[in-house]
Image (cartoon, rainbow, N blue to C red; front, side, top):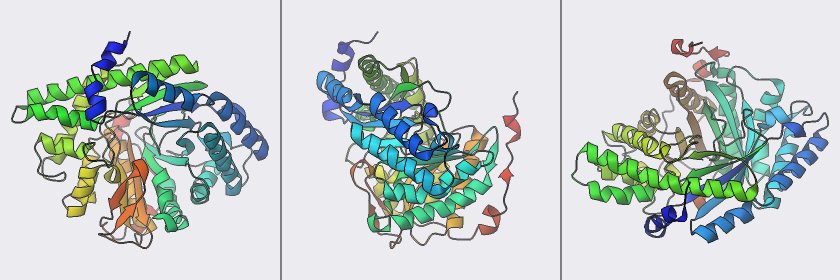
Length: 454
């Protein structure tokens, strides 16, 4: 059992080291909202979300007040909409109607974001899944807080290259549709390989079909806490360094466990998982990049960066998994460029390139995240980037993702501003050598040999 004394032990972390619970996310199954009529589906969705999540924000604020723990976001995830709308949607426009229903419901209950405008197409696309993917530019440009994701591959099934090729065009169209706001629509979209069913973080969060009717998941943060703890490890060996990270991750996760249990009890909803990721912000002192630099790098991107990140990720998992019985989601260290001050500085100086970021994704929690690229980048190049990341995830049996923003009207060296937690990002160069003949071959890349374990 957790008690309030454990939270008191972390007061310094909260007050001085930017510890926060990044999100309380309620997952809601919408499978029972399906119908043959799309307007009925929209009504069903609106009613269920506003019923199940009516107290989510109020409870989150009460926990903040009662325990003194900042809870940055309150969010909702729902069943992949391509499944919910399969019987009723006859065109991409029908799916956009559902996106509007999600947006209205989420705003009614007061949450910050809602995820699940999603299709899972790791082997091939159904008509409904293709329509949802084609509708993404319109859905994300016409709604404010709806987030979208598409899973294009898995270790078990391989990579659906038809979906990968289509997504390159979808990302470009989304960027163009929101070109007056630094192509912000792309901030709300991510392409996955091996997407988890219980991820509380956006834009990739959705309520998996393996989940129950309603569940509460919590995502913790705390790179600033780890960074301050590493001050005591300066000049010490790796054993001391690893022990410091593990112990700090344990304390951070215990705070998340307390919040999750309280939220579950007060909402009358089962507790799902703790995602113990180090999720940075653009604020000074709340940076994964700073942690890596305190491990011994002059700047993120220097030789040794991938090894340092691998060690950090592993120690966070080892420390955190002892603090909660139910660890899930992504869990580890995030490396979103626009949301991390030290990563922003490294990208702006040229020390951190997209090629180095790709190498780092082999060992981090997710993938190429919140990376601003030139608006002239072609759709096929974006598809190639997605294919590369999906291959890393497929072969290494891990989650990888791509959230790139081709910022219309801007080029290398300029800055895109996304606001709030999304931060800002220098636009970095991308290899523009054509891969069009590769990404347009059609079909799928087979699963690797080591996937056959039945």
